[in-house]
Length: 228
Length: 228
DNA sequence: GGCCCATTATAACTTATGTTGATGCTGTTA
DNA sequence: TAACAGCATCAACATAAGTTATAATGGGCC
Image 1 (cartoon, rainbow over the protein chains, first blue to last red):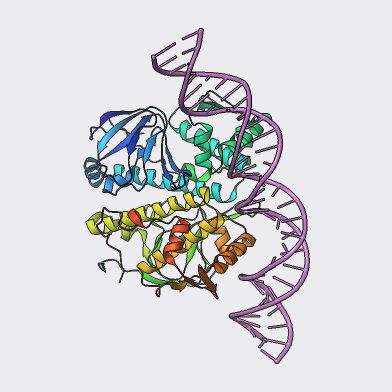
Image 2: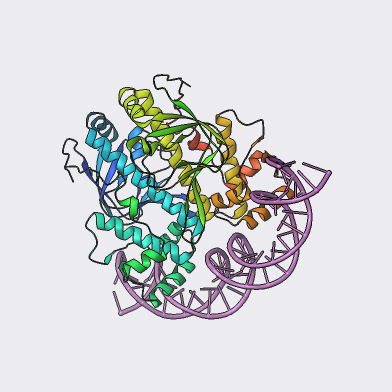
């Protein structure tokens, strides 16, 4: 972990349900999340909603904006969010000049791509309980990476409706599935606090592979960008 | 469209079912597909298969290899494939030196990311007929971009099994759904040749949005990389 | 021309997940 | 403290998609 204080960002705050970006509106600054969760999603004309990405502390939202690509989907805060906002131009410039920053950005992009790929597998081929198990493993791994897990427990602020929109299920079925997971002694989830008993078993259930995903660059741990 | 003949690639050929890359094996060269289709996929322990990306003519396979990231999923040819293989190091170098190449690579990466996002929406929230409709629109758009459509028709080499593994369905249900699409006069599909009657209606059915996806860079058409 | 294998096609039956609707929590605001 | 809104919970019922099985094509090859 290296600290690059060559770029100065400004602190930004969002309240739950507040939009970080809207479809089609140019973004001139990226957000490096410090605290809280956000998501990107699409709403179909008849009201169906699918969340296509989750942003957790330590994630960039969104690297594509760096190149002035217009967002094709809105991004909204799921909880209160604290972030550092950094001008796209500044990142672009730093990226040109420093190898380590380029490399950090690539790492983050590829990690994101792999999570997307995991979600495709989840949605395309897994049962409800497998999807939720995988998701909880993913949360655990991502939060662990930024020191937000406490053993086998962590804050999991998504409502059952949010979970449904991530996992491609209905809220009712999420509820049913959580009930089963609880009754099988796999998890404990109350007031947005998730505890995973038997992490290994849940990993197996969710067909979660931490393997190559952890050290994508052939074992070389990537740098993380940190702003002053 | 600009031609960059600063990098020389070597012609490569693969037969259907031949692997372009295997999980975990370092790739030192990328492939720019000239002809034929390939896919990336994951196999679950019990045999379920999900295709997570399709590579069509004009696509790079895969940009992540440029930074020496190990593939976490295999890539296999679905038809005979003709491609240009280019050393990762050469692309990296060109990328450092030329703005237009950097920009072309970003464009391709973001286009890929948006297709992935569309697939997540497809798998998470759409019915079988909506998924297949969307998929056929996507094929039409992508093939059109490289001059491989003939009006409303084009070569579509996927078997029903392949389609099932892309759309997260069973082959039986793909068959059923195709039958319905045919009987509703929406498409004609025989001997790997697809004709879409009523493209607009199928776009509506599949909830396909060509909008921002076509000109991601705020209306500026991206450069395409072409090798000598 | 005839055989073979992969693919396509269909039908009958099963099941996971969706739908509807009612009830009860819980945290927030006045 | 009451009233409210957003969630969580649960049950009964509906349905899209999965499963299994068998038959019909159709293209490649000797």
